[in-house]
Length: 112
Length: 116
Image 1: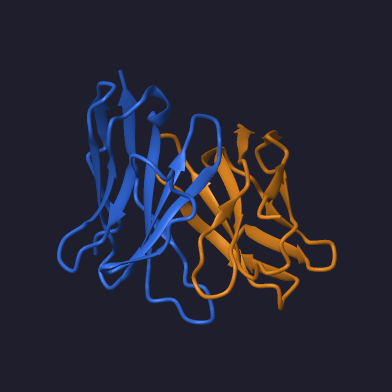
Image 2: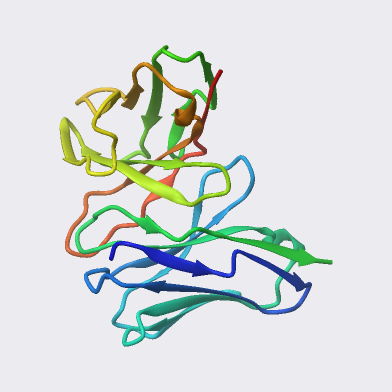
């Protein structure tokens, strides 16, 4: 019940295309859903986060879509660039600062 | 203006030795989290601490592992009598004091622990 399932494991898109990464969760107590970007040799960097009271949040080229009834959320990267090539992790946590439960990660490659 | 600082960045130990990993949270952050990342895997929660208190250690192995966050100084993750399976990247994250709404966790660049 604590798992967060992420797909796909790897993704290759062309420059300018849309990258879409999906996550699903079981624990209905989760109420905070961040996405992290990680480059090799670096720590995860917070990209964007959403709470379940909204269905979509957009920041620049990055958009989170959230479906509370289906217990699914996704990251869309518009106009993907080679510099976006990295590993992306979805995560979830409960109320009040509890630990993050991470998905297994998606390795994104954007070809020039 | 420094972010979360972890040291050392790389640590090599022989089986049976002790490993000490240090984490200084961002300025103004009073909550620290430790996560472990095995190769090609996601991050797994280990322990959550506030100053002088362990809040949640449910992800930490019962033996050989311990963590502290003293009133003064960095948080320390200590692994005694290391084994090959402890080889991983260990990440620390920090956040401001948490209320009803989650505060973002900001990560350091990790310590890569290798066991010979």
